[in-house]
Length: 127
Image 1: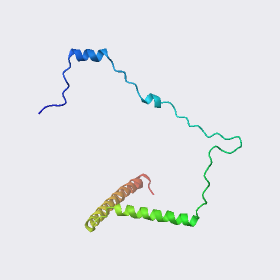
Image 2: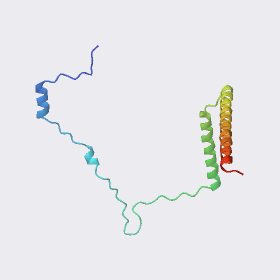
Image 3: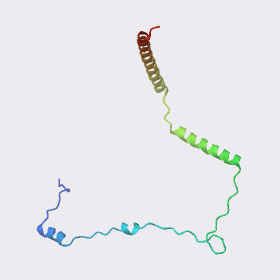
Image 4: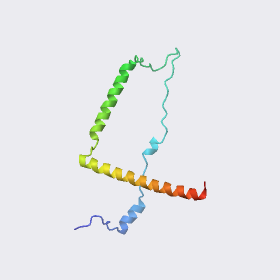
């Protein structure tokens, strides 16, 4: 197989040519480095703005807007529920068993630590 990652053999002539004619790289980004200044519309002497503003829309009925918002939320929730990986019955039983064992272990550990600390405090603070 031929290794294509090898560097080509450099001769003295090619090295001299490169040294004799250095390439100047001009960044095209220098033109874009200048800050962009946006001009604001100038008011006419009559007091009206240069750009006419579009007429404001009539506000939608609050009830209609609420119903559309609720409908949009429910559609989004339903689409997210379709993406959920629901466990099978066997997986559900296994996960429940793991949780019950972990809760029992932590309960026993807390009971033991509480019992030990209460006996230590009985020796320190006698009744």
